[in-house]
Length: 553
Image (cartoon, rainbow, N blue to C red; front, side, top):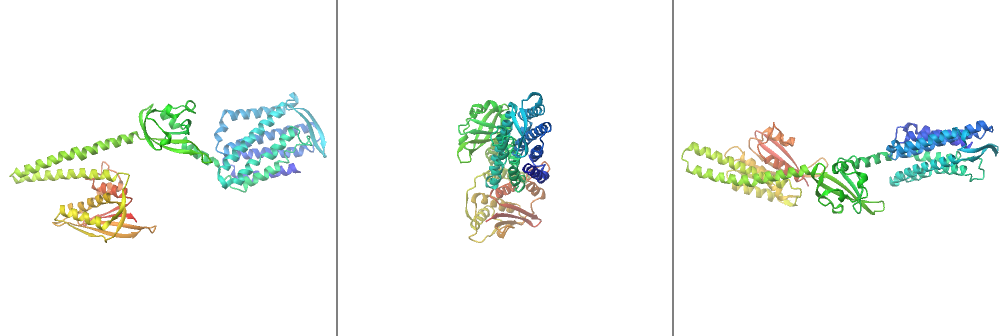
């Protein structure tokens, strides 16, 4: 009756888990439970059969069902914990072959007696027990199956326990679940109990079923399975496009991912347990030095890498090594170098030459009596002055793109007033009105914000209409959708407005063959405000341009 109850409980467990059969490992668990149910029903029936022939057939069926249970449980543990790839390896196939050969030996035992040499039906408590004399195959198969089940239980316990308190009870249950029937099987085969003719394994499947019901049905262990996390960990390292190396605290290689093997020409088997530095030609790499840039010689030639290192610690917080992530910055560094050279030429060489041209043009204009020629020289002088302004904007943009911002408390009224005073001296014909309340402050980079304001105000003056162009700088205070206070500086002019094609370039964020901005001023404003953590909005039309610079705080 107890064996039947264990079999019925197993079927109930199969029924409850059937809808989850598509989950990782669930199919293998159902196979193991199927073998378990067959073993329980088989032995329950065998206890009522006293005829030696039919009884030996049922005994063989029990052994085969136990083999299926052991194989299914190990495969379930591997697949559920994210190690399903091992099921396709040669060693697992060899294990399956060994189980299959053992099953054939069980079926053909009357021919060779390798599984049991003596099989005598012995009445025990009114049931048909069997007095065995087990052969070497029986002991080897039971020990091998027990080892496979224990490995599976350890994998499950360790993986589920790694979730922390969330699945602590389930982890204990999973680790203990296989033990009762496993102990019953070992006691029976090695004849350790008081009734060696009776096999209590199927009776001990009852607590096994109850524990599994708790772990897999009445919790969410199949809803949040560790295969996802293990696959994520593998993808985060092995499938990462950048080279990754994991070394111990002495810099010896523990593992490297595929990108590292390909980029650096490393063979994992050859470099494992050896210092990583010994296999990387080029500048010295120190794992404990933190983020660094090194030049390494690779099969593709010299390359520069930005290396980010992170300390590895075990569960007790002990330092056990480092993770090194390499990012190829060769193209980026070359591009930065070219931009620096071009910027230097633009800022220095071109500026100096244009200063000389400006002087010659002024001198020539002073000596020419012909008005038409003088007008052409004046136009040429304005053009060179404009080109010099481009160089100044390039220098300002370089400052705007610097990553380190020196933020201080800035008095916006004083800053806008200083900008207005300076530009009024340079352009006495223009009017610059400031309507920013005294005492209005903002945490920002003073110099960069001043550069942005100067650019906008001067642009409004230069492109203003009439003999006395006017520009207004005022303050708008509002709150965004989250309720945070937003400070908005507004610069408005009465010019003809910014052409649509120039604004489209800024909004698109890139220069294209069909849409070129006429200068760097708008880029300076856009990049500068974004670098300060703000946003910029342009409103333009025939009546002028209004630019809003918005900052939180």
